[in-house]
Length: 373
Image (cartoon, rainbow, N blue to C red; front, side):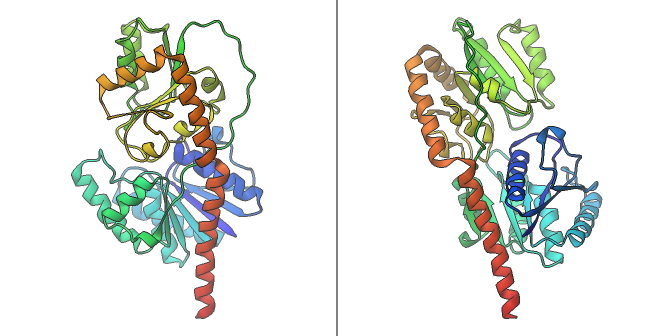
């Protein structure tokens, strides 16, 4: 089977990009022919397999721009005519629109993976209605949609975007973490880790300000990620004299080392699909504190492997941080449960085989229709 993956950006490292990379690498390893089309140059840190053909569509941009969007449809269409895939798999809202229209014009079946709908909670009502209208139209030319959480599946159905038989939930899954040697560091601090881009909808500043209010407790705060709001966070840490307790790692190819050195994982956000970083922290056996948004509750079970908190609720965040910072046995119990839940539900193998089955099913249906005609 020849598969083309279409995604808006591969110049940055985020959940959708890692998903496309890992999925594509595994498909190629199993003998599938895979190409990736993106609007940006490939970030070398993503390390895609050398057998994957990478194409850049210069007009495929994240921002809405009628001129470039129309050009992108024709650019992607030309690339699809060259590669002649059996299936086009699209990821992210803009690439989902461009890729599905281009594929439809050539009679190529499509699968769209929604890594979080553009009309999810936290989006303005005007934008929500616009995105719902667009997705309703695109749904008519889409063979199958994969949602990474049941939350997103129900959101699409309740808004009349797609009929239930066209949508399948396949929870995100992550590859096994590399095992690193344990370091015997004499550190009385308990390390809190957050891995996310410093950009909307993430809320790293909320975590910094919460920890600042409990300076009497033995915490150290680490951030992995970069983005437009990183400078603001670094400046705040500097002027509030928190440099010795807050560390910024920037972007990292691998987060095994920060995970190994941490005892608590936090993800604060205004909206989400199902973050891969939470799943990696669960695999590492960490208790989780996370905003109760999107599909997060499908990985973090409140008071079982961590705590769910209402978004932007600083008071409850402080309570939960204090609980975990002052109770080592609670951290251990919740961390153990995180690992159990990960092994049960969120392995890469489980996600991969379910996704491959959807891809194959869509292609088989198309072939059967052609044969019957």
